[in-house]
Image (cartoon, rainbow, N blue to C red; front, side):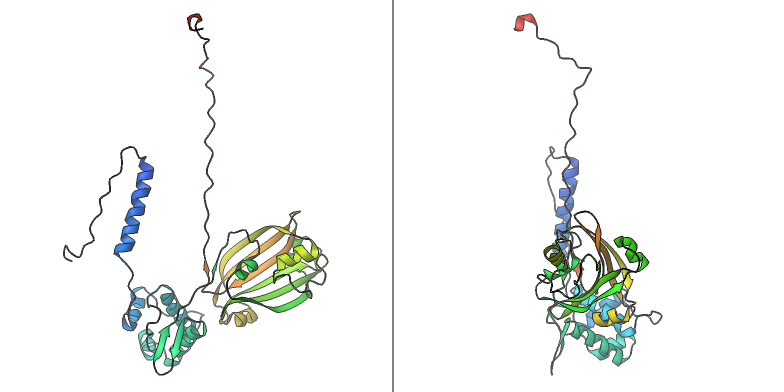
Amino acid sequence: MTSADRTPIPRFVVPACVPLGRAVRWFTEKVVHIRAQAIPVEPAGPAAFLQDLSDRGFVTSTSSSIPLYYQLYLILQRAIRDGRLEVGARFPAEDAIASHFAVSRPTANRAVQELINHGWLQRKRGRGTFVDETRLPQLSLLNDRLSFSDEIGAQENHRTRFIRRTTIAATTEDAEALRIPSGDRLVFLRRLHSVGDRVVMVCDSKLPATRFPKLETIPFVDGSLFKTLECAFHCPIRHAERCVEAAQVLDQDVASLLQVPQFAPVLLMSGKAFDKARECVELMTAYVKEGTAFRTIVGATPRKAPERRADASRRVRPPAAAAC
């Protein structure tokens, strides 16, 4: 590397009056900003794209329970998400993919077809396969929308479809969480959420049928469960809890709805919703498909400066007579 190729080292002058902690934070932000400008990630061509996957340690495994074609799909999808190929760039041929990963051509073909079906690639007749412009659904875990389904509903081109609307018997676990007798009837709702042509999530909800009669049949207000509870049953939701964990799709019906193989990885979200009396009224389980981004911004609350207490040892002396 010649001296002309090197990125010049910036010099900063920090006034002596600036506190050390603030100066360090300011200097770090400057250096990170300059490095981000000086070392951009350049998208590669098809051949370099495959080599980059190997350099990053992305390989398939025959010992995994996940089918080879789906492993390959996840690897290629991740690289596209990371911007290793520009939008509109030619995608590697299926023969090249099969040779590089030492898999059969039908396996490579099915992985590429999955990318096309999910909107990551576009096949042009007589020309080849190209990277398509895809926007990931971006959700937040922490916001003022207490309903996770409503959070997805705020996305552009969102669609919801009921898969099941029925009543079931409460299990011992359900009854304990909802504080109802075991065996009582529950309203069970299964909804499929999509953004555009992309399936995002399967969401299951369980609610006490005695408190919300005919909920399984009445139309929802603006497509929202929580708005329906408030408007139709005078039960506004005031508090919600969520738990997130990495899991696999065990339910074959859910896997089919998400268009993924059984035992494929998903983000499993479970939660509870509470009314204004802090009673649990809903149990929620959501299976979020891979390819959904989460972004949460949390701001620190400024701390109040501690009040200064008067020093008891310092007594205020009365003014001298001459000063009056």
